[in-house]
Image 1 (spheres, helix red, strand yellow):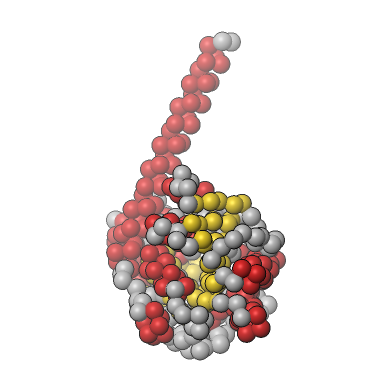
Image 2: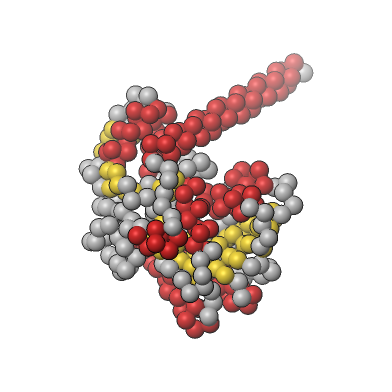
Length: 335
């Protein structure tokens, strides 16, 4: 049994990681400030005596006795990371410094959840780990992209200078249950719009491409990376090399949901990448890892999840309405 700290543990990825680590029999501390994370994501773990939740912002130091640290804390969708750009880059940079400082004091192994955004709008396709990227350092996405690039720099310098045992993974587009319904990311956006029979909004021509991996595949890759020998630091790409255009994704979701949605087009946001596809040769070689869940299967699970959320929300609304009408009736009866 290991004692493991997961920063951002109540978020989309973090909650799935916490669940997997608890199921493997470890003690887990979930650290989260609940900006984008939610207690709903981890409520199924609350009664487990090996699971602990701490409300904390990693831009401030934190201390606990642990063996491993997964540093996931940072808003990851444009809507959230652009809401407070300064806080976003502080989370990446100061958060990395605080978590690395803790790892150094404890001689703990630490994994940084970096991102494919370090490649920016790539001029090399697919993207290998050796590619340095094409990133705008002063654009509206820079608070996230450059923040993650700086955190990678910090991890490597703490390793070279202080012998901290580090791992760096670059996460490509990931989807699955517990994504926030309105976080602006393409899969959740399209599914929500399709289920409501609203127009599906594509930015640009729809020819820009992404590669989508299911959350379970990502968690498996992260755990395998953490368990590699200390002399292998990464960075390493974790993503699904199957590439789809936005138009293909929208049409697939319309078909799967039986939606009456129409596809509409809007201008492409500034600095939005035209293509994104991981070269996972290194992950296959070092981790024996590759995605196992195809987009076709993963979307079915995703659609079922959002349908469940919709039913639960409608029940809650009906309950609140019934309670309101009941209380209003009682008030009228006493007049």
